[in-house]
Length: 263
Ligand SMILES: Cc1cc2nc3c(=O)[nH]c(=O)nc-3n(C[C@H](O)[C@H](O)[C@H](O)COP(=O)(O)OP(=O)(O)OC[C@H]3O[C@@H](n4cnc5c(N)ncnc54)[C@H](O)[C@@H]3O)c2cc1C
Image (tube, rainbow, N blue to C red; front, side, top):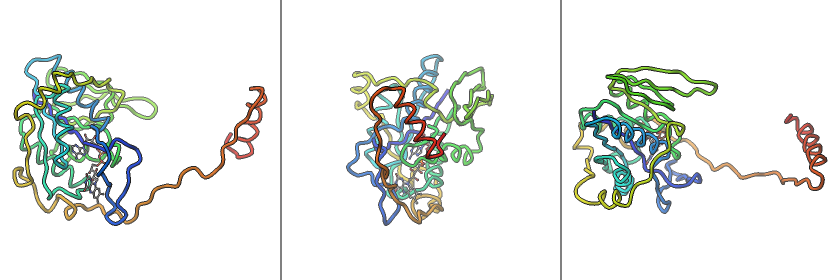
């Protein structure tokens, strides 16, 4: 069974800065990590590999050359190989162009039973890329997966809802998006890190290497235009600290909240 896990390298901060002219994220000078939900996706793929025979896990990313580090980290955790789609032609891609490129990368890889994505990236934050890849490839999809079982040629997934869950079955091939409740990702071992940098474990592919429509990638191929972006101002009000007997403090707090019609 071949499993492909889409991994996005993201800035290690919630304080992303935005280029005021292009409306795109400024990534320079910010340390990068594997997107947290993608670690859960990878962990689940590795658990399947640990449980069944002949399972191959490929990690796939679209990004600048430095995204190589994210793929090597995934290999150090246990993935078999990495593929990095990297080309200036991909620069400025919105979610549509990103999913177009990733779907082309997946077609290039060819044989797969499960495609895993994270639910959402912590920088772009749209949760669109996974479902879009499934649409490009004509695959069934189950999003927000918090529990997963494999039975024969199908997956059975518990799909989280705000106030409950669905249990959904799908035949493979299928695209799944992982949430953090799915598992606790493992750490890479020291030997794993050493081995990840040995040999040719990450393959670089340009836009020409994969069969992708150039009209649908990069800034020009992106239907989304950022008209305006802004950084929300911080807290405006002054805090208030109640001191003394805790019962009096609680009563004062309730009075304040009532005054502000918050309770
Ligand atoms: C006009 C415009 C221009 C942009 N220009 C750039 C740019 O130049 N450079 C840039 O980096 N971003 C750029 N972005 C942001 C970029 O579109 C998004 O970061 C990207 O499309 C993914 O969307 P998201 O972060 O919301 O991912 P989500 O949809 O929230 O991600 C869901 C999951 O999809 C997978 N995934 C998402 N992106 C990737 C990826 N690149 N590789 C592998 N797996 C992935 C992961 O598994 C992830 O957990 C631009 C956005 C817009 C609107």
